[in-house]
Structures are given as structure tokens and as C-alpha cells.
Amino acid sequence: MNTALLREESFQEQLRPCWAESPKETKNCPTMVMWWERVAKAHINKLFIREGTVKRRDETQMQNFYYACLYDMLQRPIQHAEIRAAINHIKTKIVKLHNAILARGHNELRTEDIFQEERMSQFHCD
Picture 1 (cartoon, one colour):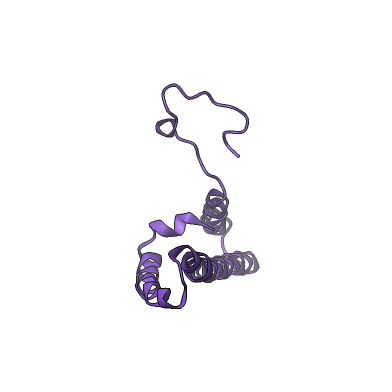
Picture 2 (cartoon, one colour):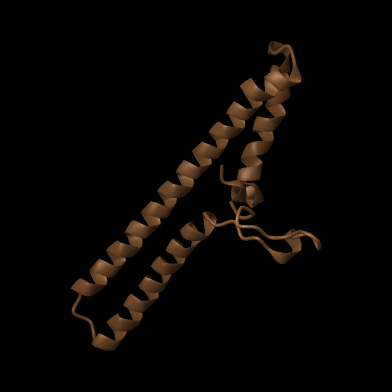
């Protein structure tokens, strides 16, 4: 589950109605734990999967658009200096897009996340 989605306002707006409707379904489950396991987790998981799919599709479309622009620029007979600047601009956008995709996969451990007397081990970052 990509918890970075929780920081996005658009995702929070999708989550609020889903979360507001979830307690209505507690009547069908005998305990809150069973409701959480069977209903709430499933709804939240589906919402995360759906949003992740939409984000990946948008990123792929954007990436394909940048590559198409790059290809079109290479096909045009434009002055060398102009095309070089335009190609570098598109390449920069592609690199930023790839970096954003790769950054999602890394959980950075900040110094404020470490307690004063805590000792780091090789298992700490897993």
C-alpha cells in the first residue's frame, strides 16, 4: 500500500466518503475486529489499488507523450541549437518523471525518526 497517497488532497477527498459509509456496515458483523478485517480493510485496499492504477496509467501516458515529443523533434529539420535545447527540456521532464516514480519506493529514514539512545542495526531499514 502506497501511504504517500494519504498526503494527497484528491485521495483524501475520495477516502472521506468511503470511510463515512464504512460504519454503516458494522451491523452485518458481530464484532468490530471482524468488521475491520472483512469490510473496512477490503474497502481501503480497493481504494488504494484503484488510485495506484490511475496514477500509474497517468504516468505512463505522460511518459509516452514525452517520448512522442522527443521523436517528433528528432524528425523535424530544425536548427541544431534550437532542437538541442528542446530535446534537453523534454529529457529533463522524462528524468523528473522517472525520479518521482523511483522516489515513491524509498522510505527515507530521517534523523528525527531515530530516538536518542536507539542503536541502528542492519535490520532497522527493512
